[in-house]
Each structure stands twice: as C-alpha cells, then as structure tokens.
Length: 326
Image (cartoon, rainbow, N blue to C red; front, side, top):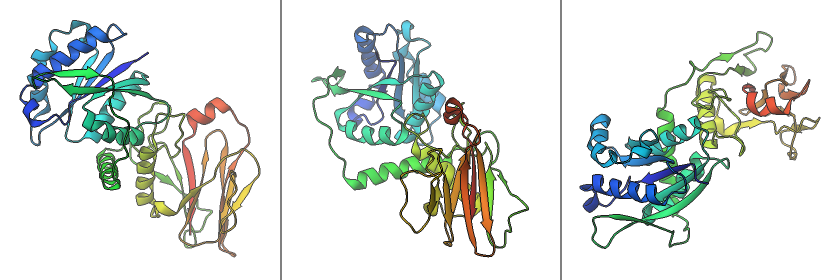
C-alpha cells in the first residue's frame, strides 16, 4: 500500500509553466479520487527560479491547494534549485515519518533520470512505484497513466552529471550535531603514523539511530552510500588522508586478518599493512576497535575486537571509527 506520493513538476515544458496552479490542482484532484489511501502524504517537486524567494513561490500555489482539505496537513510543495536538493529534502520528510513505499508521478521523459537519482539517494529500504504524468491533448491539463515505456539506460555523461549534482549538493550541507572531531592517542608516534578516533559529530547523516558522522552503509539502513562517502570525504579532509585509499575491515566477528598485498578474504575483522599512503580502519560500538603500531618495522593494523556482541545494537549504534595512516 502506497504511503506517500511524489509529484515531479520540476521540469515541466515551458508552455505548461504558466498554468502550474491549474496543473497542480487537476493532478491532486486525480490523486484524491484514485488513491487507495484516503489522504496519503503528497510531496510536489517544483523548480525554484534563481534569486526567487521560496515563500513567494509557495504562496503562488496556494489557490491550487485550498480545495484539498483531506490533504491539508499531508501536502508539501518543495521548491529547490536542483532535482537533487528537492529529492533529498523529500527523503528527509519521508524518514521523519518512517515512510518507505512511495509512488512517483512524473513526466515520461523524466523517468530514466529519476531512476538514477533514486538509486543514489535511497537504499533498498524504500519501495518505489512509477506512473506517467502525461500532457492532455488540449495541452492545458496533465493526466496520470500507467507507465508506457520500459526503463532505458541513460548515457554515461548524463549519469556523471547527476552524480556531480548530488555530490555538490551534499558538500554544501552543514555539519550536524557539532563540528567534526578527531581524538588522538599519545601512545602512537605521529612522526611515523597518523591516526585518530572519530566521534559522533561533524557529518551530514540525520537518521536518529546513527551518528551524523556515520561511516557505514548498508541496504538495511536509510543512509545511502553517497551520504557515507560525503562523511568520509569530510573526515579525510580533516585528518589529511586520501579517501580513495581508505580500507575498512569487512566484519564477520571471527579471527580472519587481511594482510594488504595478499589475497583479500571475503570477510575479516583485522587488517594489517606496511604500505605507505593507505588508510586502514575498523568500526566499534559495543565491540572494541583496536589499533596496532610497530614503529620498528613500520607496520600498522586495525581490528574490530569482539568482546561482546548484541545484534540489535550493532546495526543501530555503530558509530566510531579508528584509522591509521602512514
């Protein structure tokens, strides 16, 4: 059963932009009549013109919204300069309400683009249905219809542009819950190894059960890989390492150790290296992360040490990483 409806009016043709009030009114009317839910949460994506004030654009759509009393507190129009900004804002609203089943109503020409945005900004926790938003023969109304075309692969240059747009937007977001902080130990010599322990602050992850500096992505979580990569980028900038040479343990709660330069196991709880320019890391929550440093052989290691383990806490509370670089 659909829990929320997303209407994409972000890239309407120019000849329809002048009648956006009427188009929105007719689209909401169709949703209200056809929806299996009396009043689903409805989010409308609209393009915000450069230099315009968001409140003014919201007010310009009010006449189109006044007739929908059943949607009164379940309808939000989201204006943004980019699709990434609009969709990420809507994702936050969905997560606040713990909604996961979303129907997206959008112009046919936008469908393949939207699929790329969804794949990057959402995880397997969410389920999406798509319906086509078609221009009626009089060019004054929009009609909702079952999808008529199969998914098509976008050209790689379009995918790269979307990825760049998403990355630029995430980089513009402020840090949450405080500044990024790195703790260091006086026992590890900084003239040979760089090291640090992260805290819960300084990233952009907003899911309440995760730290804002979440560095672990999973299909079972609402925090997508692009957000985790942005958290890692911020940590790398603060700590002075290359995020492209970052290696973390692949936890199995066993005794396997990966020696970099040899065949990498499918899973391991320890990692050791004597290679320069790489960063190794291990996570910890109720399980204790441990660092090893050998200044004589110039080798270092990081391990996820299982002292006690609670499956529920592992997925909810994992928040701290340690890392070593040399």
